[in-house]
Length: 94
Image 1 (tube, rainbow, N blue to C red):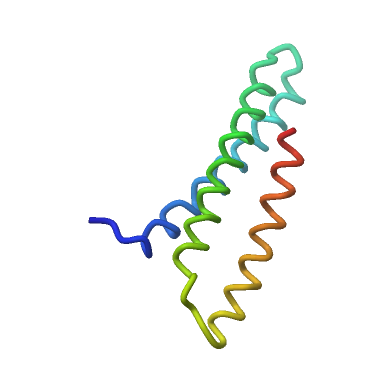
Image 2: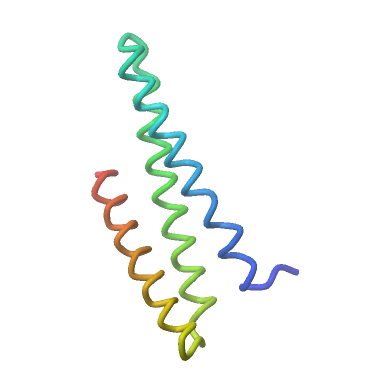
């Protein structure tokens, strides 16, 4: 059985990959202007990447709820940057 401590490290790679591939698709759409599916692909990858970023953030919050001391300070900084990143992704997706 998968523990909650393993879910966050597994999920965190999906938004990174999806958003990077979406960016590549958007750049490709600038080169191949007649093929509009590249831009559409980039948009959908950004949407799915944003959704998986939310799942990764929520799993991280659940996993680190009981931390204290120095580990908690590091976690709070990490979580702050995760919220900032998610906010930027939501703004870019709309």
